[in-house]
Structures are given as C-alpha cells and as structure tokens.
Image 1 (cartoon, helix red, strand yellow):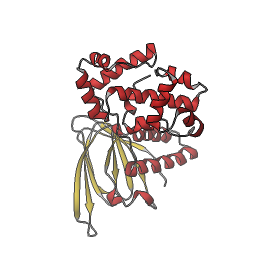
Image 2 (cartoon, helix red, strand yellow):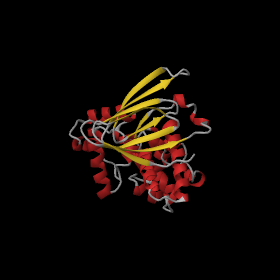
Image 3 (cartoon, one colour):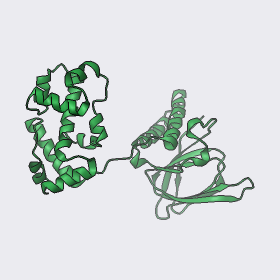
Image 4 (tube, one colour):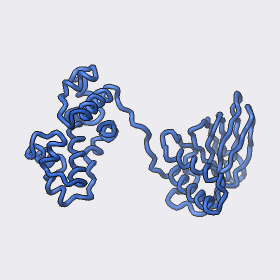
Length: 287
C-alpha cells in the first residue's frame, strides 16, 4: 500500500465525474457538501445498482475499485475535501469489497476523525518515515471503517438522570462518598422518587440507590487492586458504615469477599458490575 493524502478544492456548483475508480479511495469533506452518486457495474459495464449519499464535514466515504462515481458539489459555497487512493492486496478478515459500507459518521466514531487529521498532518512532512506511517494509518483506517468495532458515540443520558447524578457528584466532591438518599436526589432532579426509580430502571435495570452503590463498590474494588489502604479504610473512604457491611455488599456483587479479591484478582476488571449495568457513562460524571 502506497498512500498519499491530498486536498482538492471546488467552486460552488462544480461537478466531478463520472469516472470509474481504478483503486480504492477514502474521502472526507473539510468544507461545503456534496451529493455523491455511486454505481456498481456488472461485467458488461452496465449499471447493476446505484446509491446517492449527501456528504458533509464529519462523514468519511469509501469508493470501491471498479465502481463509477460522480460528485455534485455544494451549489452555494466552495467545497474542499481530503482524499487518499490505495490498493488492497489481500482483504483478509475485512471481507470482500462488495460488502463494505460506503459511509461512516466520524462524529459518532472519533477515532476515524483523529486518524484522518493525523493523515493530513503526515502529508505535510514529506519524509520516508511519514509515508510509511501514512500507509499504516490507512490500513488501520480501512480496518476500522469496515470491521470496527467503532464507538457508538456519546451516550444519551436522560436529563432527569443527569440532574440526579450532578447532585450526587456535588455531594461526593464536598462530603465524600456518602449515601445520598433517593429522596434527596429526586428533589434535586425536580421529580418524585417514583419517577426517578422508573427512569433509572428503564435505562439501567436498577434503581438509583443500587446504581450509586455499584459505582462506590467499583471505586472500592479499584482501591483494593491499586492501593495499600486497609479494608476498614476503604470501607470508610467509599461510604460504607463499617468493614462488615462493606464486605457483605462487596461479596454480594463481586462473588468474593474484598480480602480474597485483593489477593487473587489483581488483574480482574474491577468495573465489570458497572459495565454490565451500562452505568459507565454515569460513573464518568462522578468523582
């Protein structure tokens, strides 16, 4: 693979194509927009299928070798796009090109956006090492574009949940990891306790008290793995009334007492109960 990123500019209303691609091509818009028509051709050169997509900054498109394409650029303003041509000798696990997606939304997959920005930076260096690194980036970009996994994007958090979490975050930041009564969190979110329970259960499968306890237990599990604090100190630090209460709640969640967890599971995923309950986005909003 020998790839070199370039940038092209178009005046308002410009048309490019139709042309048949002799290689694969990744395109991402920097300014403006475009209506992109792609046609799959059969062995006789007849159109076997066609797609029309609107491209804007934040979209990454993949043109397939052998397809015919035409770009109708933004009629009201100038457009520019970056592009890179490349070949694929052996597709391997990403499969045949006919099954590849044509467009990915980079705003929902920040890694694609970062790699595209890095490719543009590399293009300005013009050195053997930058060209080699560019090839590696295009390989990774293609792999992620086709096979992923890609981030689903920023999680949607209910305004009610966000308000309750914001209140708990404020309490924990100033008063430590104490238990925040559900009634207090509901009042902060301007809803009834019943409504707050329903919103949490619908989103995470557990009520707010259990959700916040899981976060405290996960913090405690990390402290067991990565600190020299005693069990009593950890219990106090993360809002449990005494070591016995902490040990009982920890064992009920992690399946092993905290002392045994510290001795035998130093490399375990301390976040798994939070991850399983889909609470990681909430945990990231808390101290």
